[in-house]
Amino acid sequence: MTEHTHEHAHTHTQTKAVLNRISRAIGHLTAVRTMVEQERDCPEVLIQLSAVRSAITGICEIILKDHLEHCVVDAINTGDKKALDELKHAVELLMK
Image (cartoon, rainbow, N blue to C red; front, side, top):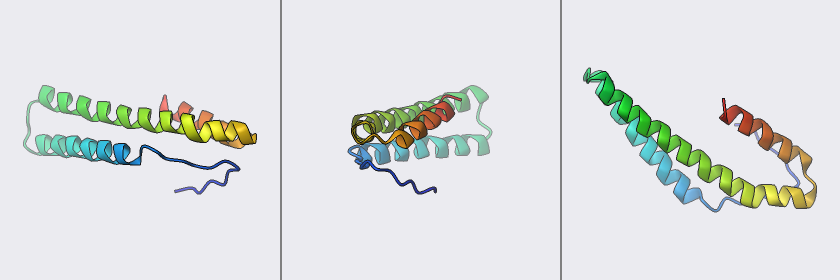
């Protein structure tokens, strides 16, 4: 994990929600593994994988919203252009 040093504060208000969703995504992924081990039908596995993807998308949305509402606002107020560049890069990777 890379440590970042910014002029702005990092405030994470949705940690509990993110952790709950991560647990749910892990549960879905564990179910996929079990289904594959049991050689379940491909459509069933694909449906479960859809749930994994949806869970991960939800996690990303919460983190991005929280970051925009707190960290980015603070970065703008303190003139922390580096933080904005890092967000742009992270969103580009997320969208791939």
